[in-house]
Image 1: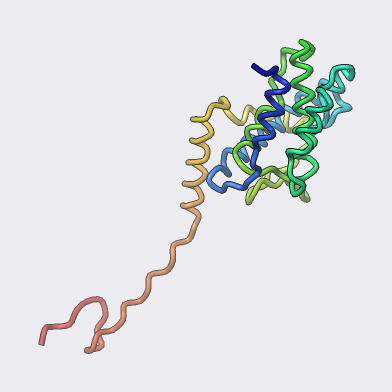
Image 2 (image 1 turned 60 degrees about the vertical axis):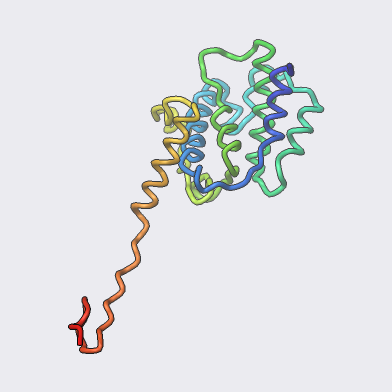
Length: 199
C-alpha cells in the first residue's frame, strides 16, 4: 500500500482535465468551498495567499519528495492555468505535512474540494472579477468575505455532488427559451388549425 503522498501523486496523474458540462454545478460549488476554506487558512498563514503553499508557510522543512513533485507537475497539461498546476503541487506538499503529523487539526483540508473539482472535469482560470469554471464564474472576493460565508456543501460525498449537478441542469433547462410555435399553415380553403371538410 502506497503512502499518502504517493497516493495523491497517483490520483493527480489520473486527472483527465476534460470539460464535462454535466458536472458544472458541482465543480462551481467545489471551487467556492475551496475559496472559503483557503480564506480561513490564509488567516492562519497570511503570507500564503488564497492559492498559496500553506505547508511551506507552516513548516518549510517538510516537503514532498522531489520525484513526486515532478510527476505531479508533468501530469498537469500545458493548457491548464498556472493556478491549477500550483494548487496540485501545493496539495502534494500539504499531504506531506499531514503525513509528518504537522498539520493543524482545527481547520478542514483546504485542497480536497479543489482536487474533487479537477477529478470531475476541467480546471479553472482567473479573469477580471471572476474565477472561470467552464461556462460559470465564481465571483472574486476579499478573504474576509470568503471567511464570512457558510459552508458551500454539507459534505463532499458523491451523492451530494450528483444532486448539485442535477439541480444545476434543471435550472439550465428552466432558463433555456423554448422555440416559438410555428404558425399553422392554411389548408386549401384558407382555414388554419384543423382539417377542412371531407369532399
